[in-house]
Each structure stands twice: as C-alpha cells, then as structure tokens.
Image (cartoon, rainbow, N blue to C red):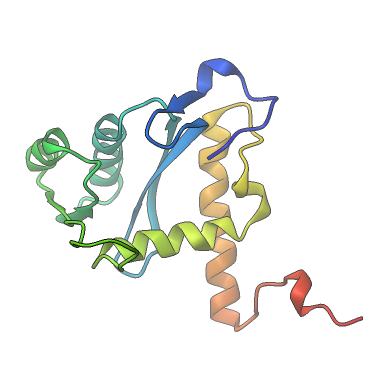
Length: 162
C-alpha cells in the first residue's frame, strides 16, 4: 500500500516487482474471508519473510488451523516453516494462459482485500507506525461484518439522492 509523506522512511521500502514505495499487508483469512491475522511490513521485505512471520502469528493465535493456501510469492521456505508449525501450506498454481482468471481459494483473500479497501483510511497508509496500520484492519473488518449482519449497505456517493 502506498504511504503518505508523513511516514518515516525507515518503515517503508520499495517493492521491486510492483515498483511501489510503501508497505505490504500480509493477511490470513478463514475460508469465509474473515481476518485471522495481519502483518504489515516494509514493501522491500520479501514475501517469504512476511509469510513465515504470518504463519507464526496464525499458529500462535489460532492453533486449530491446519491448512493454508498461498500464492506463488510464498516459496519453499514458507512451506517448510509451515511443516515445522504443523500447518500444511499449499501453493495455488496460477492458471495457464493470459488474462484474469479466478484462482481457487486465492479469491477469498482478494475479496477480503477488496472489503478492506472500501474503508478510506486503509487505501493509503497515513500512520507513522506499522503497528497502528495493523490495528486498523480488524476495525475495518468488524465494520464490514456488522454491516453484513444488519443488512446495511456500504454508503457511497453514488447512493446519495439530492
């Protein structure tokens, strides 16, 4: 995620693949897409390092988790770390061919990212500390869940009638 100008350079990095300066958000969800864990790192941190840290958090906070589906950015080191923690880490292969295709199991996480991005505060990272950024995600998820449970739609400018 891109950061604002008030974020210290020491907590940012440049993601060489996406050419974005800022931070990365690594999330773990259940099969419904509800947040289990969030890790915020500098964008320069490799996915494998963030994935290992995320697995540590998930296994400590949710000891019943036994399976994790990840994308190709999480390498064999993450799978080996999962084995040590008792979590079967399976990489969801990218479908052959060009263009967008929904990846089984991965779409759940992408949908969760979409839900989180409906909260203006999370689109751009304004917080100086990564811990504060990490604390905003569960709040946004609680808001999303309460709206869903009550049948309330997310307010947008398009819904306004004047």
